[in-house]
Image 1 (cartoon, rainbow, N blue to C red):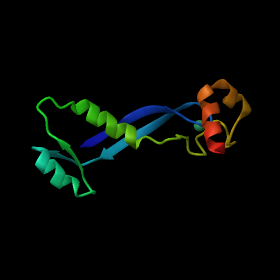
Image 2 (image 1 turned 30 degrees about the vertical axis):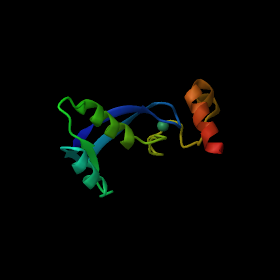
Image 3 (image 1 turned 90 degrees about the vertical axis):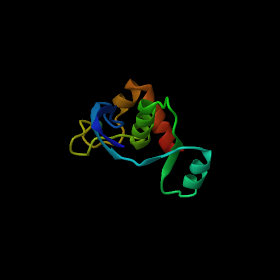
Image 4 (image 1 turned 135 degrees about the vertical axis):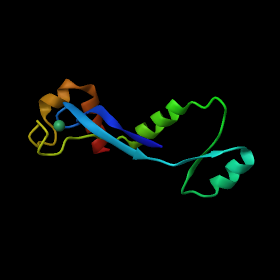
Length: 107
Ligand SMILES: [Zn+2]
């Protein structure tokens, strides 16, 4: 699976838009039956799923993308409009998500 593209995230420092470039390469083995699935599963270096006629490929791709997203996206220091301050007071009040992120940091 090769996934390339750009998604818009929100910088957790300045709350402005942050472009995140996706460049994901993942290998997913398709097993023909349960037996094959079990033997593949012994190898922890690969992901394996049971092949089905009506597989939801889009949701597989979605899962890969979500797994690859940064938990706390931030601009590079030089690109961030907050000027490098770790937590602007105004910014924190502007978004409940930022408040949540600040909470998480302290615990
Ligand atoms: Zn920023």
